[in-house]
Amino acid sequence: MQAVVDGELRLTAEQAMRLYREMPFQPLARWADLRCRAIHGDHIRTYVIDRNINYTNICNAKCTFCAFRRDGHEDDAYTLEYHELLDKIQELLDIGGTQILMQGGMNPDLPLDWYLDLLHAIKERFPKMHVHGFSPPEFIEFVHFFDPPGSTLADKIRWVMTRLREAGLDSLPGGGGEIFAPAVRRKIGLGKCDAEAWLTTMYVAHELGMHTSATMMFGHIEGVADRIHHMDLVRRWQDKAIEDFAEDGGGRYKAFIAWPFQPDNTPLGRLKEWGRHPDDDLNEPFPGDVVAKLDGSGDKSEHREFGRRLRLAGASDYLRMQAVSRLYLDNIYSIGSSWVTMGPHIGQVALHCGASDMGSVMMEENVVSAAGTTYCLSEPLLCRLIRESGFIPAQRDNEYNLLRVNDHDAAPDLQISDWSTQRERQLHIQGAVNAGSPVELTVHSENNG
Ligand code: SF4
Image (cartoon, rainbow, N blue to C red):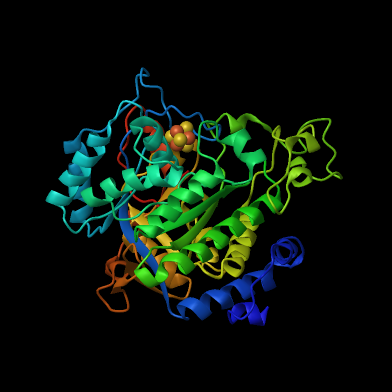
């Protein structure tokens, strides 16, 4: 483990499985923390000020874990007008924001020019605003919708991506990663791209010099081996991107963020939890673990209840998984804490289990909040959480450059005398009050599906 911490030894997938299953929580967290400190030092932990703009909720995919999508004819279906979107960016700029995370549903009614004109409009009015937008499933749908020239999928993606990049796209978020193993993916991601297409999209982005992030949504029907396999694919493709493009200024995965599935209001969430059905025998392994293989070759036929039972991840599972991700992904710079779904105080603990980044102080979240509890925080509160965890909070940009190290009296959290004005809020409660519109909220990170 010391060699892993020192970056001299790479964990195998089998070793990662053993760590997750066998190592007690405290030493696992400690090793992950030591690895994090070896990369990021002992003092600074980061956050970013950005805003999640979901430009449309009209989507022709039907992911079973999604409570956000709408069909075009539904009353609360929407596509934002440019002026609404630009107004949101102005509000972000007014609080010191540096980037937008722009993702939406797979809306077949939007032509390529809609995206190009939008990006031009954003960059014309906000030339320094970083546009972190369009996850791989959106790119795969762009290929289907726009029918670009090219003999391979990579060629077609490159054609679309080059144009979006020239219009102002700066980097890609890792949405839609979920779990890569085909047996799981087919069950939960109806209409979404497969793992090969997802990873190819990111590879093309790296080729074009753009950075990206990778994500994983776990704690549903998958087995633990599926999670390790997922991280293994990210690590392999990162190796490839570094080897193929780093010398020529190529991009890479800058961050990995894993978060537990949020079940409320989703079709997937209606499945019974493992052990709640009279036929379930808790002495038997979870169906997902019976099916899952470290090489991703698991087949649903190996357990008749596969895909019919959930195993939700609580705080302990989440923190263990995050710790393993820090130790396994030796070629990825940042591990993000998923406090948005797990709550601010688990987010604090996560900073001692391998996470180096608290994600976004963001003004809006519509996707995860539609599926259950998510939290929002003000910048002072986020800084306070980081400081109370024993670190100095620092605002970063998309490439993890430090913009403002809050080690002085003018730090956002040190200006607050009445903390009763800064309590965290649960977004789904506010969302219910504002039901029917893409509500204005306060804080989020890149942790949405
Ligand atoms: S997760 Fe995204 S792609 Fe899937 S149904 Fe929801 S909006 Fe559509």
